[in-house]
Length: 116
Length: 113
Image (tube, rainbow over all chains, first blue to last red):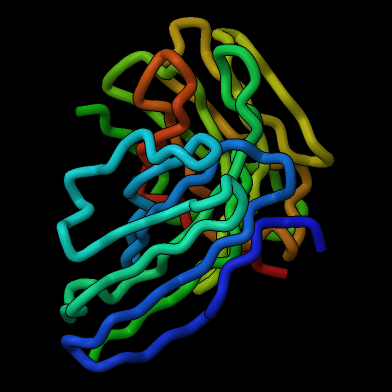
C-alpha cells in the first residue's frame, strides 16, 4: 500500500500520560499536514511541514503538542500531559507541492486517541 | 475567518436516484477539496477544484466550482450503497495553495436499497 500510513490506529491513555503518533506520508510528497477531528465535526488544521521545516502551527496546537519531521520523510506528533479534551482523531495528510500550488491532498486512516 | 456551510446536513435517497450536495463559502475559494469519510475512518480523496468554472468527474461523481468561486456542488448520478458515508468539503484558506484546509461540517448520505 503506498498511501499515507498512521500508527497506532487507536490509543487509550490515562490523563497526564504522554502519547506519540507516527505518520508515514506518500513517498516523494514534500508536504505533510496534521489535522484533528472531533466527533461530528470536520477536521481542523494543526500544523504542516515542507520537507523537514515546520512552516506553521495553528493556535489550536498548545505547548503540550510538538510535531517533528526530522528527515523530511515520516513525522511524529507528541502530546504531553494529555487531557480529556485531547480525545480526538488525529489525521495526517500529504501532498506534493510544485511551483505555487499544492497537489492532491491525501489523508491517512487516522489515529484515534481516547484520554480517560 | 472563512467558514464553509454544507447542505443538506443529512440526506437519505433511494438507490439509483441522483443527488446533489452543496458547499458554500463566506469568502472566495482558492482551492476546494471533496472527501468521503466512513464513520471512524480516514478521509478518502475525491476531487480537487482550483479554477472558477472547473468541473471534474470520477465514475458517477461530478464536482463543480462556480465562476465566482464561492460555491461548489457534488453530484452523484444513479446512487449506489457504496456511495453511503459522510461527504466533506474543505477549502484552502490562502491563495498560495498552502492546503491549510477549513472544512464544512459534513453531509451524511444514506442510500436505501
